Length: 311
Image (cartoon, rainbow, N blue to C red; front, side):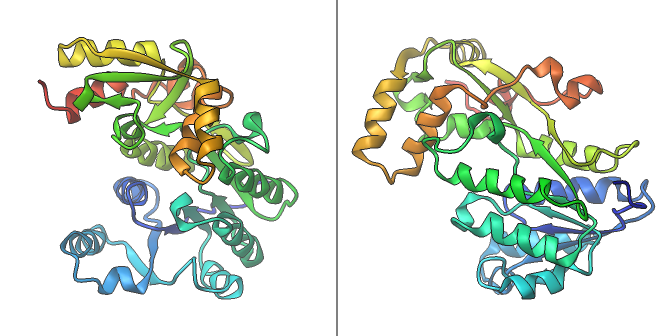
């Protein structure tokens, strides 16, 4: 199914950590791609807020020449969202799991009801097809339901971009993988378990690149990776880049599953367990879209150099 140029009117849902990166890259390439019109959906409360950082974001959106659509994917009905979406050729969802259970399906149903020509859902993560249903992270089941809806229809083109974990999440204190305060790196599952990571900036870059690729990429899962590395390689990178020797502690799969049984509603423990299983959370970098097209993205060592203080 190849419809004529479905990228003239683009709507990005959300301007959070990922959404703003996607917007910047779309705006950057717009002048060379026939000046597509770009808009972003923001909640009215996000626009009217007195928060200084949000005000700066809105100002940047205006400077980039991006229009603002005031709507709420959480509280608006599917019919209301569908009416909004019907004005656009392409919808890119940057509304992640923090929106809550059911929102990914709600957005997808609204997109399909609107007859949008092309849809990029929030699937900027792991390979849900490989992980399957019933994983420790129950939110992943909904992602498979989204894929089922998209694959069962032929009216709307879809594009899924699998990127792995945000690189920065490896270093979030709450996640506990790299704990610099305790000079410790924890391995999820084993030291040989691998994880694929990509920065939001690079996800934005690749989303824009793939969206405008010729011949058009459609109705498939595309894999990208800033880095794919084992937890042993992660510890090595921390040591080498920060000139230190970290304590290495393995969190076995059995230990992480027991942690989840003891606290089944803890979202971080769900993520630790599913990544410790090692299935569908990593893929060879050499087989990614960016590698095949000679695009160099930010590695984990690059990220450490750019963001971590040397101690």
